Image 1 (cartoon, rainbow over the protein chains, first blue to last red):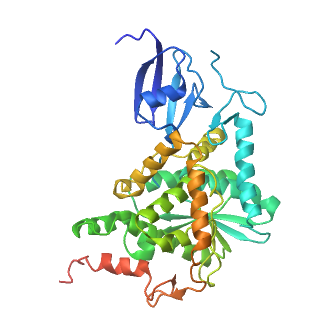
Image 2 (cartoon, helix red, strand yellow):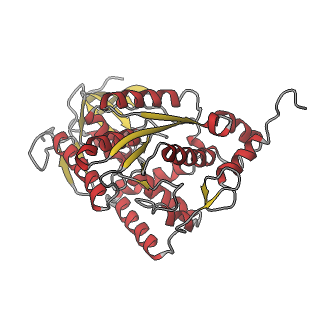
Image 3 (cartoon, each protein chain N blue to C red):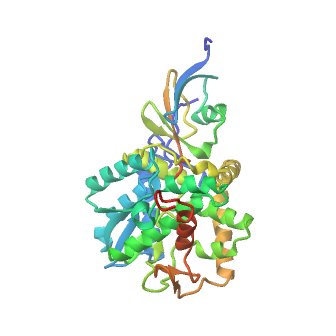
Length: 72
Length: 317
């Protein structure tokens, strides 16, 4: 499906890579919530750099989500 | 709208939002803030003293690797020795990856690591133990066996290697989750026992300390990513059996709605611990293995008997 807004590529915990379409001006926090995840359970790196949740996502960003909740 | 949020100290690009402070920090100031709090925990509560020989219990996960890294970092300045103890439970497809990350960091920072195995200590791996538990209807959970055996293995190895303290990677989230689980199970002894440090309780029990006690788990992960401490993301296959899993998600949901919740819960836990009678100072020694215990026979020996009595040795029947 074509994305007319903000397209980002997301690596979710190294398990799955997904393309997500968000509103312009969307933040990392918006992305985490759109994926149905909890903000306190994720650390995000945008284009290879760890960023705060309120960072606005640039177009075509590559986002890697790291899970805080690791067992053991 | 600007795309970058700024560090409240220097105005640089923020890497971490510290929700309970309502402030953003860049990588540099976050690392400084993080390390300062761990060091303050060690000094303020006198968790370590000059001349101590500190064993760090290391699983190869982010919390224990961070603990090992920081204890090594502070060791020279604060005048104590550090080494690592890992426990190989025998969980195929999991433990080998964690141990590899551990060996790599230990080499990098120049720390010795000793490995104790369930097979050597208890005669079977955790995978084998879980198979037996399954045959018996999983009345005893894998995490129960693993937790009891690990505590036994770590204390014994630490003592035999001459440690004066045993540091673990428990963080704020661990403490709050365990407190909440103890509450729902009305397990008052557990609340009393789980603090920042254990009091000396006889020669055979190495006092335990928790340098990350006040650090949220999310900050530990951010720290490892910023510092480049590599931790493979592999989950223990038995985590699904733990009550801790739903408890952790529930607490995180509340934390997202009400930042600072975990610190408030921790504060209540500390109040409880001040009010409740302290745990006994002197431990008994297990009649079977001679290790410290609060019962005549220790839980590790009970579980070992339960597990091994179910095993049929070929050719003996």
